[in-house]
Image (cartoon, rainbow, N blue to C red; front, side):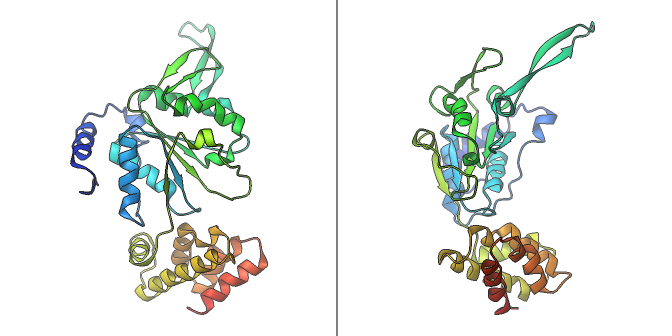
Length: 293
């Protein structure tokens, strides 16, 4: 799991920490799987080193490029549970930090208790926090956690007034899809709190190995053809004729799976083309597939 390219000092300390985890059985379920296939080795190495040094890591890349898989992979490497926040325009302080609710003690007396949210849990337990699609959240909501992301590593709970300081092992990984509908540019103050890692789509032999290991499709020739289709679609994306989502590895894997049971052209339509809004874009995907299948 730990490549030799990671400095020996860091590898040794990570191995030592892996044997010292105090995660409960429930928290251990939140530890990710080491299943990320890196387009380049430096992507994983740099992410691990930055997190080891206590930096926040921002993963940038198109949809389906494996940002969540990478977050889960580093969770496995550090052997740390990972609490997730899925951002949207409706995200509020309660979804991030927690909320108050009515409860009853052993004597049946009513009392108001605070139920911690993902940020509070990760901070107090020294776990990983994964903020997915961080640029979907309103800037005023994200400003609540500025103190969590800088040198202070603390936050004042607006519901209890308590100041929470993060455990030394607390780490933050965020993911961003740039240029998508509903997203807003991250302000400079927030960007400066992260080390940024770009994640391109997997291609070539690495993509073939992924499809071969993950897909139910066993026809080697067709798998190779899907690798070529992916390359052709990425060329169209670079030319501005297709949106980024047309190159999604997740969608490509869906098409491979369907091809095990239905004709590949139908599989491409169902898994890739029909997801696109523009008729010309759908036609471009079908045209690219028709030259191969």
